[in-house]
Length: 225
Image 1 (cartoon, rainbow, N blue to C red):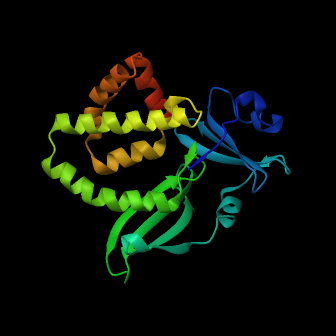
Image 2: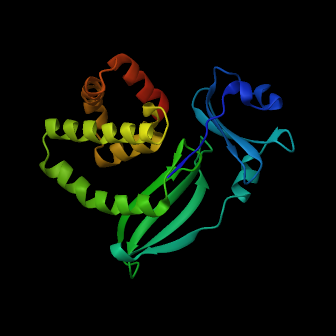
Protein backbone atom coordinates (compact mmCIF):
# COMPACT_ATOMS: atom_id res chain seq x y z
CA UNK A 1 0.00 0.00 0.00
CA UNK A 2 1.33 3.41 -1.00
CA UNK A 3 0.11 6.65 0.57
CA UNK A 4 0.48 9.63 -1.73
CA UNK A 5 1.39 12.92 -0.09
CA UNK A 6 -1.23 15.58 -0.66
CA UNK A 7 -0.04 18.96 -1.93
CA UNK A 8 -1.89 21.95 -0.52
CA UNK A 9 -3.07 24.75 -2.81
CA UNK A 10 -0.44 27.22 -1.63
CA UNK A 11 2.32 24.71 -2.51
CA UNK A 12 1.22 24.26 -6.12
CA UNK A 13 3.28 25.81 -8.96
CA UNK A 14 2.16 29.36 -9.68
CA UNK A 15 1.32 28.76 -13.38
CA UNK A 16 -1.01 25.95 -12.28
CA UNK A 17 -2.88 28.12 -9.78
CA UNK A 18 -3.55 30.65 -12.53
CA UNK A 19 -5.93 28.06 -14.04
CA UNK A 20 -7.15 26.25 -10.92
CA UNK A 21 -8.82 28.10 -8.06
CA UNK A 22 -8.53 27.07 -4.45
CA UNK A 23 -12.27 26.48 -4.20
CA UNK A 24 -12.28 24.05 -7.14
CA UNK A 25 -9.28 21.98 -5.96
CA UNK A 26 -10.21 18.60 -4.47
CA UNK A 27 -6.83 16.89 -4.31
CA UNK A 28 -3.28 17.29 -5.61
CA UNK A 29 -0.16 15.13 -5.56
CA UNK A 30 3.19 14.88 -7.33
CA UNK A 31 4.05 12.32 -9.99
CA UNK A 32 7.86 12.20 -9.71
CA UNK A 33 8.20 9.64 -12.51
CA UNK A 34 7.00 12.12 -15.12
CA UNK A 35 7.84 15.40 -13.38
CA UNK A 36 4.20 16.43 -13.15
CA UNK A 37 1.61 17.47 -10.60
CA UNK A 38 -1.78 15.77 -10.74
CA UNK A 39 -4.84 17.64 -9.53
CA UNK A 40 -8.49 16.72 -9.09
CA UNK A 41 -10.76 19.69 -9.68
CA UNK A 42 -14.52 20.09 -9.50
CA UNK A 43 -16.55 22.29 -11.80
CA UNK A 44 -19.75 20.60 -12.95
CA UNK A 45 -18.03 17.27 -12.23
CA UNK A 46 -14.73 15.96 -10.90
CA UNK A 47 -11.89 15.99 -13.41
CA UNK A 48 -8.25 14.95 -13.27
CA UNK A 49 -5.58 17.23 -14.79
CA UNK A 50 -1.83 16.70 -15.10
CA UNK A 51 0.52 19.68 -15.10
CA UNK A 52 4.05 19.47 -16.51
CA UNK A 53 6.46 21.38 -14.31
CA UNK A 54 9.16 21.55 -17.03
CA UNK A 55 6.78 22.84 -19.71
CA UNK A 56 4.63 24.93 -17.32
CA UNK A 57 1.42 23.69 -18.92
CA UNK A 58 -1.27 21.06 -18.62
CA UNK A 59 -0.78 17.91 -20.65
CA UNK A 60 -3.42 17.12 -23.24
CA UNK A 61 -5.57 14.02 -22.91
CA UNK A 62 -3.77 12.54 -25.93
CA UNK A 63 -0.38 13.08 -24.31
CA UNK A 64 -1.54 11.47 -21.08
CA UNK A 65 -3.07 8.50 -22.88
CA UNK A 66 0.12 7.98 -24.89
CA UNK A 67 2.17 7.88 -21.67
CA UNK A 68 0.08 5.14 -20.02
CA UNK A 69 2.02 1.95 -19.26
CA UNK A 70 1.40 -1.12 -21.42
CA UNK A 71 -0.85 -3.85 -20.11
CA UNK A 72 0.61 -6.81 -18.27
CA UNK A 73 -0.39 -10.20 -16.98
CA UNK A 74 0.54 -11.85 -13.69
CA UNK A 75 -0.42 -14.98 -11.83
CA UNK A 76 -1.71 -15.61 -8.34
CA UNK A 77 -0.57 -19.19 -7.74
CA UNK A 78 -2.44 -19.58 -4.45
CA UNK A 79 -5.64 -18.39 -6.11
CA UNK A 80 -5.04 -20.48 -9.25
CA UNK A 81 -5.89 -17.61 -11.54
CA UNK A 82 -4.37 -15.36 -14.16
CA UNK A 83 -4.75 -11.57 -13.95
CA UNK A 84 -4.85 -9.10 -16.83
CA UNK A 85 -3.96 -5.52 -15.86
CA UNK A 86 -4.42 -2.44 -18.03
CA UNK A 87 -4.60 1.33 -17.61
CA UNK A 88 -6.88 3.94 -19.14
CA UNK A 89 -8.22 7.47 -18.71
CA UNK A 90 -11.84 7.30 -17.67
CA UNK A 91 -14.36 8.99 -19.98
CA UNK A 92 -15.61 12.43 -18.88
CA UNK A 93 -13.28 12.71 -15.86
CA UNK A 94 -9.87 11.81 -17.38
CA UNK A 95 -8.99 10.02 -14.14
CA UNK A 96 -6.14 7.55 -14.67
CA UNK A 97 -7.59 4.18 -13.73
CA UNK A 98 -6.11 0.71 -13.40
CA UNK A 99 -8.31 -2.31 -14.10
CA UNK A 100 -7.60 -5.89 -13.05
CA UNK A 101 -9.50 -8.89 -14.41
CA UNK A 102 -8.92 -12.32 -12.85
CA UNK A 103 -9.54 -15.45 -14.89
CA UNK A 104 -9.06 -19.11 -14.12
CA UNK A 105 -5.67 -20.59 -15.04
CA UNK A 106 -6.89 -21.50 -18.54
CA UNK A 107 -8.48 -18.04 -19.01
CA UNK A 108 -11.78 -19.71 -19.79
CA UNK A 109 -13.88 -18.07 -17.05
CA UNK A 110 -13.86 -14.60 -15.50
CA UNK A 111 -13.63 -14.90 -11.71
CA UNK A 112 -13.47 -11.31 -10.49
CA UNK A 113 -12.88 -7.77 -11.68
CA UNK A 114 -11.66 -4.73 -9.75
CA UNK A 115 -9.69 -1.53 -10.18
CA UNK A 116 -8.50 1.69 -8.59
CA UNK A 117 -7.65 5.32 -9.30
CA UNK A 118 -3.91 5.46 -9.86
CA UNK A 119 -3.45 8.91 -8.31
CA UNK A 120 -5.82 8.50 -5.37
CA UNK A 121 -4.68 9.21 -1.80
CA UNK A 122 -3.97 5.49 -1.37
CA UNK A 123 -2.57 3.15 -4.02
CA UNK A 124 -3.10 -0.50 -3.17
CA UNK A 125 -0.77 -3.24 -4.43
CA UNK A 126 -2.54 -4.79 -7.45
CA UNK A 127 -1.91 -8.33 -6.24
CA UNK A 128 -3.53 -7.53 -2.89
CA UNK A 129 -6.52 -5.92 -4.61
CA UNK A 130 -7.10 -8.95 -6.83
CA UNK A 131 -6.84 -11.42 -3.95
CA UNK A 132 -9.42 -9.37 -2.06
CA UNK A 133 -11.64 -9.20 -5.15
CA UNK A 134 -11.54 -12.97 -5.65
CA UNK A 135 -12.53 -13.45 -2.03
CA UNK A 136 -15.17 -10.76 -2.30
CA UNK A 137 -16.74 -12.44 -5.33
CA UNK A 138 -17.90 -15.31 -3.16
CA UNK A 139 -18.60 -13.02 -0.19
CA UNK A 140 -20.87 -10.70 -2.20
CA UNK A 141 -23.10 -13.57 -3.25
CA UNK A 142 -23.55 -14.70 0.36
CA UNK A 143 -24.03 -11.08 1.53
CA UNK A 144 -26.88 -10.45 -0.92
CA UNK A 145 -28.56 -13.80 -0.42
CA UNK A 146 -28.35 -14.31 3.33
CA UNK A 147 -27.66 -11.12 5.31
CA UNK A 148 -30.31 -8.93 6.92
CA UNK A 149 -30.11 -5.11 6.74
CA UNK A 150 -28.84 -4.89 10.34
CA UNK A 151 -26.11 -7.45 9.60
CA UNK A 152 -25.08 -5.46 6.54
CA UNK A 153 -24.87 -2.24 8.54
CA UNK A 154 -22.76 -3.91 11.23
CA UNK A 155 -20.42 -5.32 8.60
CA UNK A 156 -19.77 -1.94 6.98
CA UNK A 157 -19.35 -0.15 10.30
CA UNK A 158 -16.62 -2.64 11.25
CA UNK A 159 -15.07 -2.48 7.77
CA UNK A 160 -14.86 1.32 7.77
CA UNK A 161 -13.68 1.33 11.39
CA UNK A 162 -10.74 -0.86 10.42
CA UNK A 163 -9.85 1.36 7.46
CA UNK A 164 -9.84 4.43 9.72
CA UNK A 165 -7.74 2.67 12.33
CA UNK A 166 -5.20 1.50 9.74
CA UNK A 167 -4.95 5.02 8.32
CA UNK A 168 -4.22 6.37 11.80
CA UNK A 169 -1.65 3.67 12.50
CA UNK A 170 0.14 4.66 9.28
CA UNK A 171 0.41 8.23 10.56
CA UNK A 172 -2.45 9.71 8.55
CA UNK A 173 -5.73 11.37 9.43
CA UNK A 174 -8.23 8.60 10.16
CA UNK A 175 -10.62 10.11 7.60
CA UNK A 176 -8.06 9.16 4.92
CA UNK A 177 -9.62 5.71 5.17
CA UNK A 178 -12.58 7.13 3.26
CA UNK A 179 -11.44 6.80 -0.37
CA UNK A 180 -13.14 6.67 -3.79
CA UNK A 181 -12.01 3.05 -4.12
CA UNK A 182 -13.57 2.15 -0.77
CA UNK A 183 -16.89 3.63 -1.86
CA UNK A 184 -16.65 1.86 -5.23
CA UNK A 185 -16.11 -1.47 -3.48
CA UNK A 186 -19.07 -0.89 -1.15
CA UNK A 187 -21.34 -0.24 -4.14
CA UNK A 188 -20.01 -3.30 -5.97
CA UNK A 189 -20.93 -5.54 -3.05
CA UNK A 190 -24.24 -3.80 -2.34
CA UNK A 191 -25.78 -1.79 -5.20
CA UNK A 192 -28.29 -0.38 -2.68
CA UNK A 193 -25.67 0.70 -0.15
CA UNK A 194 -26.75 4.37 -0.28
CA UNK A 195 -29.95 3.41 1.51
CA UNK A 196 -27.92 2.02 4.42
CA UNK A 197 -25.19 4.67 4.42
CA UNK A 198 -26.82 7.17 6.84
CA UNK A 199 -27.17 4.45 9.47
CA UNK A 200 -23.66 3.14 8.79
CA UNK A 201 -22.01 6.54 9.24
CA UNK A 202 -24.12 7.37 12.31
CA UNK A 203 -23.03 4.13 14.01
CA UNK A 204 -19.42 4.64 12.93
CA UNK A 205 -19.44 8.17 14.38
CA UNK A 206 -20.77 6.75 17.64
CA UNK A 207 -17.92 4.20 17.74
CA UNK A 208 -15.40 7.02 17.26
CA UNK A 209 -17.30 9.40 19.56
CA UNK A 210 -17.25 12.10 16.90
CA UNK A 211 -19.81 14.42 15.31
CA UNK A 212 -21.88 12.38 12.81
CA UNK A 213 -22.61 15.47 10.69
CA UNK A 214 -18.88 16.10 10.28
CA UNK A 215 -18.22 12.43 9.48
CA UNK A 216 -20.98 12.35 6.86
CA UNK A 217 -19.45 15.44 5.23
CA UNK A 218 -15.92 13.98 5.28
CA UNK A 219 -17.13 10.70 3.81
CA UNK A 220 -18.84 12.49 0.93
CA UNK A 221 -15.90 14.80 0.31
CA UNK A 222 -13.18 12.17 0.38
CA UNK A 223 -15.03 9.48 -1.57
CA UNK A 224 -16.25 11.90 -4.24
CA UNK A 225 -19.90 10.93 -3.82
